[in-house]
Length: 330
Image (cartoon, rainbow, N blue to C red; front, side, top):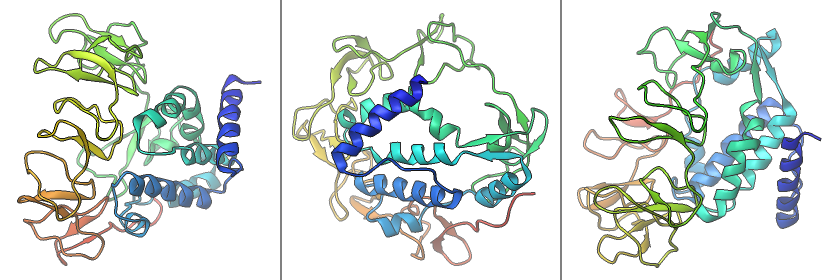
């Protein structure tokens, strides 16, 4: 049996025993879309990126024309949709249990290395390099849809382009000294700014010397003022921490610069320092008070906080709104 399938089956079997829910079966395109959005919002609410599910769902900006174009292309044979991989992808995302790095690190590592194949291969394009496109999902293999107009914004309109092969990623251990170099997924370009640089995997060993990029979750780099430090395990809520390092285990925490312990982000209405980003994620420090970002239909004055999620401040109405999704790109 394929190693990918074996590993995924083992993870889903454990998860199903834990929560009593069976892995997702094949999903139609509309169900996949709805469940993907719902899972995104579940995690946003869990990790305090949105106050509740309804508010999150109302602030999700769908790429204009995306699903209408995908439906059109499936019918025309330009895109293949794999319902089985779609179901497996959703089943994986459903297993993210909390907002702590120590809980999610094992799943994240597997998702990036092996299981990501399911989510990244839900759509398979058939348009060859050099062919016209609006979405990278239309392009064959790992090619991307390079926009013809660099100022066109896919988050607000259909943007025409050409299917273009990506520059091959440099494997771990390879030289990445050139400015255009791109390392293989999960690795970083490490080395002096003016000397030879190498694609390197983050360390999984406590006590390893590091800079801010070279410790793998659930480790973090406990840096000093020079930017260098040592890989250590993430810190629990209420435990001592280093204010200049991102060392708190729970993503809802910050290292309080006064008490120097991992503390929950500041709630709406609480006092804050505008130089620091310590309000809950669906709020911002306005003056010296954590202020909720305006949601769909709410006023968005020029001096106020930015709209939540994918909402934008409409000039004509002065309120937060989603951009029209529109028809299929053609």
